[in-house]
Image (cartoon, rainbow, N blue to C red; front, side, top):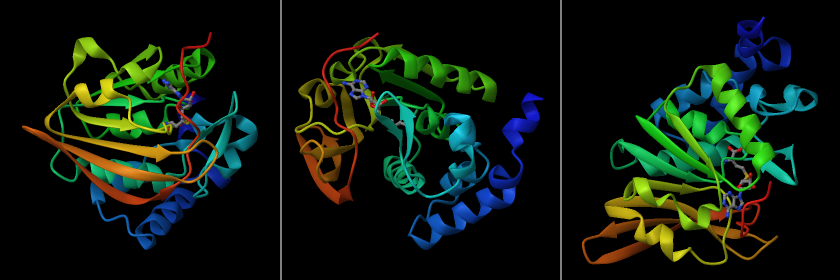
Length: 222
Ligand code: SAH
């Protein structure tokens, strides 16, 4: 039954998920709402069945097409940083991937827009969102470097693939007072996780920590 596999057994059980949340707490995640949403979101439905037994390890896992579902600590950290100043009405995510990060966001903010360049991944992410009954995630198959202009400006933008420098369109689509969390740096190497906040006449940059993301690539692929 679908509800049974969302609930999980053995390596995907609630106890296993509780242990993951304890680990995130030990690593410094403080936002209790974020921790609660991670505790109650089935990460195993966002990975292939063969990987399901590892879904509650604090590690990135392959999701096909050479891409990965982000490490839970990074999902928690980026979410916590985005929400630090209050809950935005809407978030734009670039890099839907498995759809796990957008599912976490969708339980914390009213509306999530997410963009993915690989159509096969987007289809699977949409299926997982449907299985969870999420109604507030809107997704598009496109190159997210261009943002998602008709719904801009955004009070919050999260980019989950790393460009060498921030695409200017994303700065343009960030609202005044808005926050953008994004890894920036060289391909295949280590990147810096940055927080950009937009003031009326400036953009302020803070470096949070070193991270390793797949690269932000040009163009949509079928
Ligand atoms: N947030 C995802 C992380 C997936 S990895 C999750 O929770 O699983 C990063 C994703 O970004 C990959 O799926 C990759 O295909 C996508 N990506 C890379 N460049 C992109 C671009 N220019 N536009 C949209 N998506 C992109």
